[in-house]
Image (cartoon, rainbow, N blue to C red; front, side, top):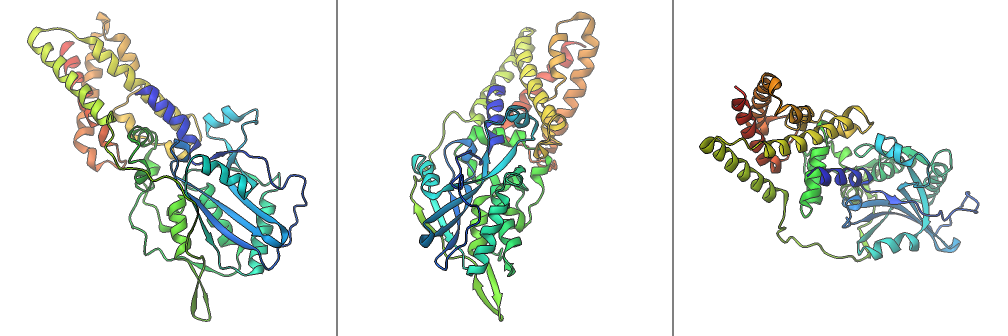
Length: 399
């Protein structure tokens, strides 16, 4: 479980980013004057198989056939060549980059991954198109193209939302009636993780209390699909007449359709087995008076390591979405100390009190599970039950 969670952590932090491509503007004049034939579009890419692409992607397309121009502005890239890439990556200080590529180059990756690309052409006038392009080119300057990535507040989708709202002189009115209200940031992620139970578990464990804040409809647009929906139902108000902001989405590239088949080997199945083992060992302890400390040590080591990971992400990094993690109530870093003292005779009193206090906390967590301010994943309930059961026996073993 620890190995899987560590892998989930590394992949999760990449999220919806794509590796940095060569720029389509290299060596070209950055001042581009659009013709009357130019169009500006929102591109929405479907989720992919890899975890970094599981939530989809958004980009801006600017085309001008008279200027032989077809560019994609992509806020979801980062630079592997940065000498501080890995330290910044771990600490949560990784800067993302606005990159520019030709549409055909952009499309190739999605063609290879068999992902859908949808295009929404925007009903903006030529002046607004030029304003938008000029703003994008200013953002693309070397001194401006880098920005501190924030999964919920500042990413490839929110940057696009903001630049349209801030650059276009006319006020864009969003109609949120199609959104399901009252969703937290965490809840908005869950539909994308249905067919990836281990990824779902890892992300739910790593996200702290901020993920359970109720998102406003404006904040829903941190994900590409809600951004598409918001643009689709947005409008301009001109002389008391509503004018659609965007055209209906058009399929540029067809991808594969994911199935909803049942997945074997899910975390819940494995954790129920662990609970059954804990129950059987506890029965053996009562019946034969056997001390099965190997199982207790395994549980304590695994949960202790997870606790260290959660604590490090909270206090040792700048990942704001991973602070105040209530999973520390059951994944206690002190479990690693308890492992080494479990068989030390002179530490029996300390172990006894530690087990009793831990048992009390675990019981409160199990009872208060549905009412905690952070949504703990129900899939780990059997693990917490197993840990609670073994804490009871450890407490009684050292009376």
